[in-house]
Amino acid sequence: MNNTTRMTALRYALIAFGLTFFFGLVTFNEIWASGWRWGGVHSHYWPMIVGVYATLGFFLILASRDPLANRSLIWFTVVSSVVHALVMAGEAIMDPAERGHLVGDVPALLLVAVVLAVLTPKGATITVAKDLGARRAA
Image (cartoon, rainbow, N blue to C red; front, top):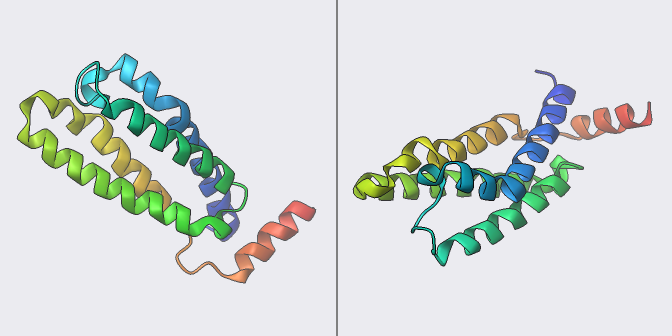
């Protein structure tokens, strides 16, 4: 995959995950509560997690404009998604009532982490930025 293709794919991934974080959590919670909702119907946790992830989603969408300038946000999303998934997996294993998360939000967060980690340039060079600038000008 060349740099231009990778950056285009990264932009689309940031938009897709951003929209999913911004709108999708509430939808997933309604469609498949056992794979997405923690703490029952009247949890104080749920509005907090929706607020945090909606905010992250908004900033991932903004980051799609210039992913290289927002690598720290992208890597925060990668690392925090892995940590969140591992903590949730541990809790779901210990609490049989929460096992649905092992096939719901746990793999979803790991997917986010893997896709963004693979697509984000590790040592982004000025060449990538020049390629993108030339492409925009054309």
